[in-house]
Image 1 (cartoon, rainbow, N blue to C red):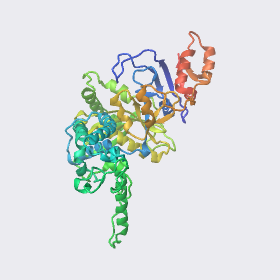
Image 2 (cartoon, one colour):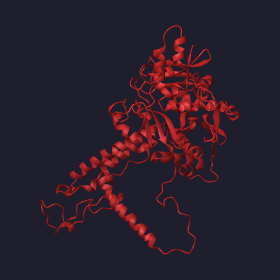
Image 3 (cartoon, one colour):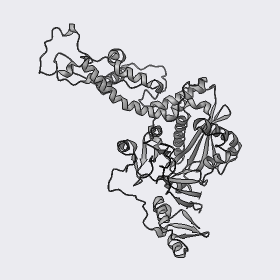
Image 4 (cartoon, rainbow, N blue to C red):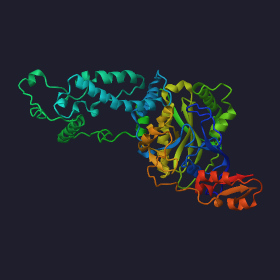
Length: 526
């Protein structure tokens, strides 16, 4: 029950029948339990999504993880500790370049593909290292290895990472594997052990088979150690420089070895008078605010174009009523709290206005502990800007802003992470992040989950075999029901009930929502 005395009210539907999966396209392989929420407090919904539930309009559903074809794990990002990846920085630079100069990228970047390519690159890196090592041996560049020395000259540390541009990945990977040895001396820091000594330098040295490393040659050193030594030398030189009497500029982030913040990357390269003006507006969608009503038609038109262009919907499918039901209607009550954010809790649309017109809309729920992303749609003309990635980064920054007003609001929920669908793995690139264990409802770092998911699409992610569901149903009789406009515990209702026995259904519902929610949420009984 909310602070104001209101209850959440739901009708439970169960989930016996399978339906078409949007990920693998299996006709009846997707299984979930669902309930219609007439109204819901933000705290109840926070507790539900922390047990694997998620809403679509007013319909709240929970995948049957050990039965559905593509298990969907709730994923959250630690917003305060988030640092953008190379792909994220590239997206921000792309958008800022468009805003400042009007340069639109030529390539079309489908959502999720950058993240998938980044994962492919990380997997190709060790393979590239192994191939380089093999080629080096065949080329005679690892004579020290054959004589018993460590083969650091082709160590994995020295492999040049694949290029940032995903469109060039195929060509660059081939080049990285087949030609890096030929270009090593010109593209990387020279190393004394990178190649055998020339004939002139080795003519006076007699090889001693079986005696180990040549004592006349410097010891092998890793590239990272050489870089560290050079960095220390530079710092020492700076300290030895005389102090200038003229005022020095304020120290930059780079001089103190502090990485740039997400907020700095968002505004980087933007002049004071950019060619295009981007404004981000937050409007409450439920109940609809005057600003939401005034921009409703423009927002709907962008949604319709998006569904037809990106999801190939026929023109008659994305109707206005469907738009309202899917992305505007929400069971969440608008609430405020003394320790909450200034904008309050509930459901919102975050609108991206470019030069006075809407080009993208992020649908959000602001909850006591998180900002939960519901959906994003954008104008197809701007698809090359990777607005899905850009909006997620803006939403993480928005979460950080809200956390300054409400300290416990520290997470950004990205919905479901579907490892079995490669296109959906991009959500795992927003790190540090956790996945929700489907059995204990404990959060587990995504790094510890990947190896398990590679073995099986469904996995108990919690490594502690003794751990259980801390909020498991213990007393069904205490679950609350709404019967004939009267709130009562299920035990009292069961004594008055007439007709068929519904205990099995109510027990399934209460087990899925957990003991605490079962004692707060009203389950409607006819």
